[in-house]
Structures are given as C-alpha cells and as structure tokens.
Image (cartoon, rainbow, N blue to C red; front, top):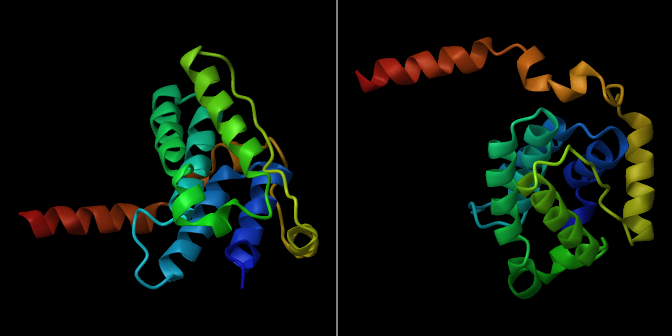
Length: 170
C-alpha cells in the first residue's frame, strides 16, 4: 500500500484540507507514525506532523512556536526526494514546498495566518478522502473546537502522567 493510502494519512488530508483541524492532523499522523515498526524522528511522517503543529500554532498566534516548527518541517521535506521518493508522489509536492516556504516567510514578516490546502494529484487519494470525509464527524471550520482544541480537551490524564514523572524523578 502506498503510504498516502493508509486510512490515517487519508484522515490527515481530510482534516488538513476540509476544516483545517490541525490538532487532529497531528493526532492521526502521530498514531500512524507510531504504528510503523522502527520508525524514528527521521521518518517522513514527522515532517507532516510538524507541518500540522506549526499551522496550529500560527493560527493561534504563537508565532515563535509556529516559526520554529515550520522551519523544522522545511528541513525534513526536501529529504523525501532522495530518501523517500514515495512521499513526493500523488500530491503536488512542489506546491507543498512552495506553500510551506511562503508560510515561513509570512511568519518572518509578521503577517497574519494564511492556510493552504495540500493539493492532491491522485484520483485514488481523491476517492479515499471523499469516502473518508463522508464517514467522519468534523468540527465546524473556524470554530473554537478546531482552533483551540488542546485547551478545550480533557487533560486530566496528561496532568496525572506529568505528576507521576515528577514523583519518579524525586
């Protein structure tokens, strides 16, 4: 299976392009990445995870975090061409690089957030995303539930885990 045909990557595309739920983009790709045996931080999916995270930060006004994260994504994307050419197929990879570069430049110029879609070139991905979108429940575009998701979710498990780690260090 082409890596872009995986259901979690398809969901990533739906979240990125349909309602710009960048937090969910990060979540589904992290799940996909962690499911791959021996994956590490050099895996191509981490560039997309960084892209989603950077877009999430930028839209929320965290420009330093967005700039740092999008710049990390920019350093990873070009390695696809030689190391993982499958990750340059079926989407307009040149347009993606152009759009991420433009986003970084906008951040450097302190310009406001501007989204962009990931352009699909493959009929197969178009079909998969169309079918997936019909079965997904998407939060409304531009809603607080999308823009401020990490602030609105139940974080009790994260806080509990953080406290346990503190205890372990003592």
